Length: 275
Image 1: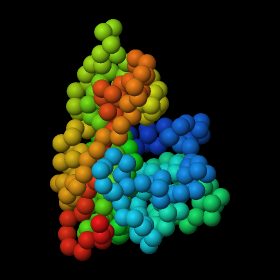
Image 2 (image 1 turned 135 degrees about the vertical axis):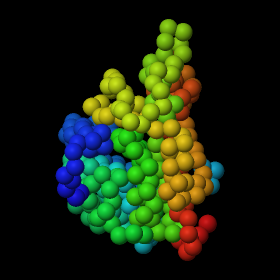
Image 3 (image 1 turned 90 degrees about the horizontal axis):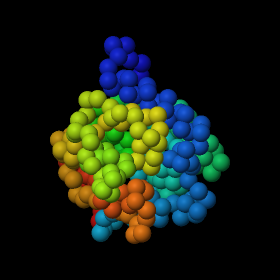
């Protein structure tokens, strides 16, 4: 990542805070930092799937030869699996420890993988129109300005290329993590993107030690469109499970789906993927 000399800003503070947080999480072996399993590598194309929430596939049947950017996706999972499925993959992440996991997996599995340390809102190391497909797991919550992220993604995506992203639902981030005495989850935070959420107890919904920002659906979906994409599909992964106890992740998910997934295509001629 290029060196910056400006005065500290909310963005810069968030980047440095979350870089340290994810380095710690990787060192501690947190769940989201565990590399892909042998079973996943047994059928990597099936693991990367087609979106997981859509009624139709989101990705082409074959990934061979496609230039894929796995954005803010260190940890030894997404990048190695897309590479194992045939794509030419570049992984970008702010955390050196998370990228070290990708390097370790690529050596162990003998997978070719390009790795770059940097923030998802500064992809200046890549030329315009470099990638056919951008895969972006949950991470926009770690920056105060998502518009800058989407502008950079649009710049490095070829005309007709795809952008598959997942985000923490703003309503889920606004709500209490535990139900009240009446068994109801309540909204306790306004929609805002300029200041981070207060710290919360570690859970599947809030990664310990990180700074997170709420981004509205307008900022997420509207921002993707404003950057130069057309949204083709949206889904909410179903994490609800009948019979789960009050206050568990699965119980809360039945009322407040925690994530949204978005399939978008870069506007312009020369579509790359055939349905």
